[in-house]
Length: 628
Image 1 (cartoon, rainbow, N blue to C red):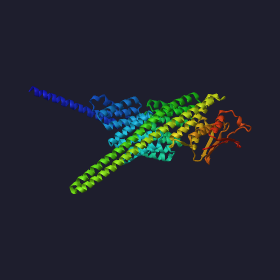
Image 2: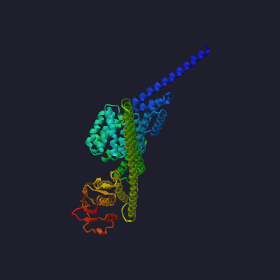
Image 3: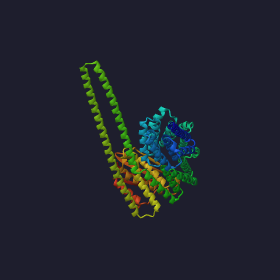
């Protein structure tokens, strides 16, 4: 009797404990559902419920706990608490890994990749995105896969690899259209608008932005709606429509403040700073830039932080504050070099190559699976034939099957060899390109050293700042060649017209040509030069352009600067003209002692060319001829 009562009491205790645990788990599940419902409209309320769940974590199921950590990581990222965000993401991933939850792990990787992207760690971002893609593919999770494809596209656009970005946008678009996902389609419209804006097609860009805003206005996705408003404002700003631009900036900023999204607020402050800078309202521009800088540092947005540093450098340069201008220029250059370093570029290329190789391996695996299925069907056919046909027919079928398998094995062997050969060729080409790159960098660093040494030895009354500007432009003329080669498909030749226009813009920005109304014009045949010709030619052009913008228009409020480039019988002719004050009538050019003229004649001799100084009625006219 006593033992029976003891059993009843133990049973009641166990049932009570299990019931209490179940009740707590149900309560925390409700809290999680509330947190998700408040995520887009009231993120502070969402974070409140996440904290309640974690406070009672010992009485919460691992699944709800992991999802809560993941959601908390996103919320902390949005309000700029990056360290807390990393901690929450890694904790969520640990729980998902222990439970072998593939979808959960993939979601963590996708969000970590976005955080790495925001922090300017592009190689780690790309690696995490590709890991998320493979995991979502394995689970046939098309919705999350499409969103990840979209994020990868955004990253490639940031890296200015437009074709790769479009490739992933197209993958996302196909999935969103097939599932009729309106939010996803709105994402696509926004990103297509961004691309059209980069392609200088403002009307098409505005049309896509309006389509996106129309879809988003019917949802609770406030952050995404504000992002599109901000992009629309930036487009109006570029079209010189200040009222429309400021209106969209203000709407976006109010939404970002409402949902406590400091990164968005920082972007709005940056956009407003750009607007006030063009309006010459330097005080308001400085105020907005400083607020944007503070918020960008708070949320660890390295990319935005660098953009603000650059604009502050331009602001202080325009206002004549040389010390601050140089200070922010050095900060911007150092940050840019750390983000877009050669090491990071190599890592991205390596990750990309590994992903491409994995895709090819998956294709090979699918081919193997289809071969196995075909083999099973053939065996089934052979079994039926044994029942219906004679031994001779069976023997004939067996021979045919063997021949078929041999052909199939031979085909697979040939394809495998072809694939290995292609991979080997690609690796050889990559090694050759790297060697060529190092060789070019070494040569050009030697040229830079020589230029600086000549400047040091040359006697001049110029100020230190002026010498720095001139030297920087000479170096920029060489750096631009490498930048054009990097963006070129051939890695060997550069379009001379596009290169010349870039030189003119760089010199114009350096010597504040915006204070004068100087129009520029470049007319050129379709000519592409290799680096061995373009470096000396670019330095000559830089000297002539610098001389014109710096000295040619003194005392004049407006002027015209023109460059004409033509090719005939493998000879390039470049005419540089301006209608400025020109040279004195009695100038003896052979006795000019300037470093610039010495460089011009020396570099002309280096490319076996001919340099002429002509005497127009007004202004100056230089003519350079050399063999292509």
